[in-house]
Length: 331
Length: 235
Image (cartoon, rainbow over the protein chains, first blue to last red):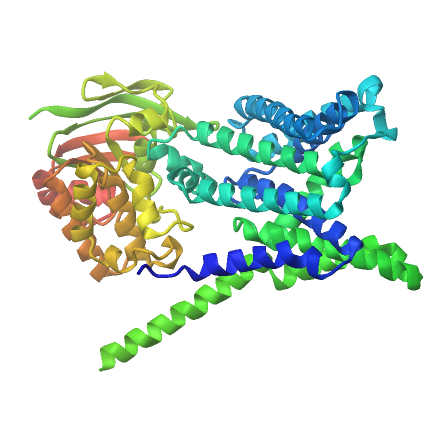
């Protein structure tokens, strides 16, 4: 009988706990909060593909989130609010995000990373202005509400659907980063010149990584607007990108699990600080406390929560192995 | 003996600096050609120029009869030219296995045989097969860097200062490995350690201030104390 993979067992146990959660704890706010965490976890994981696995810093990731958000909300409002249209809108958002990320990647990923970061910021700003000005379609910053598919009027159904998406995206992205292609991405991140010298056309790898990240971010956008039943241009603002960046950094860059943890930490902090603000006015300045959390996380977990824990765990494992080897040698 | 690599009067700029100002030499099939010279003479830049990492602004680089002067790095590497940069340049975030797999490109029978060959050449790598490259010592990293370039049946290996920063006992191991590799492929070696260079090299090219000063047989240079003293500061 093959050896049981403990990591997989833990993973599916955690998934099971979250599947059962809304049936055991009947708390609508908690279900909504967890749904938000799952959605932002997808966004943060997509950012981790860029930052953690390819070494690309993008300031325009909100643009792809926005493509998904607008594709879904516009189609649900203007066509109908059926499940078919919802799924179709996810695909449309992904295709748009894929095409735009492909073009941006092809044009700019040859540049040095800081130029790419600035270019993505500029293009993202351009799309934000386009969304603001194209009021007939987007209604600008005022935004618009729309009806979600009937099945999602039960929050638990939507929660389960988002959880399914999170698990699916996680497994697909894990498959992607663990594939030989993913290993080349890590090589590109570490040293692009060295990777080229091994015979790889690195631009191709960077563009594919950018497309994968863009498509996953678009899915997060589609899910997010359905959770709110509302869309406006703030979904394409730089704040969304910065949130994804911080979730990834706090959770642990290049770990894939880290961004999920990062999303949970940030969303829970936001939620709890806003609750505290009702009792203690000082917490109305919650953004300051948020800043303190970021600083503490960077000081105590320089590689992010998951990254630092992983490093400590591997360090201990190494020490144990060395001690065992010394014992064997002595014997 | 057939000429595998021919460098004719190459000039290379890095930003505004004119680093190579006329480097020429030939590497014959099956031989080890050593590039010698003081620090900053342009040896590393010569290798980087061959690989297209610092493209030449003038001159030509002919490999196997094909002009590769203007080709991009990945195409040059795919023409079976392996490059081992200085400073134990491996991928620290990948395991030893992954470092080799990334270099291998194909995983057919021939490639696996090749992998077995390099693992026999560098048995230390087997011990750390599943460990991240970052955990390896300097010597092991150097061995992995060399193994990575060699695992792909390179027709030409460009190796930059493999003994740099290594303990003498490790240098011995690296040297033994190079002697083995020499039986299988052509090598252009940049090496400051003259003893090592003289033990492995068949021919030499002296580079000074970005220019070729002299080329010849290593056996001649070993006996030319004046040349060694003037350009290598030995003796």
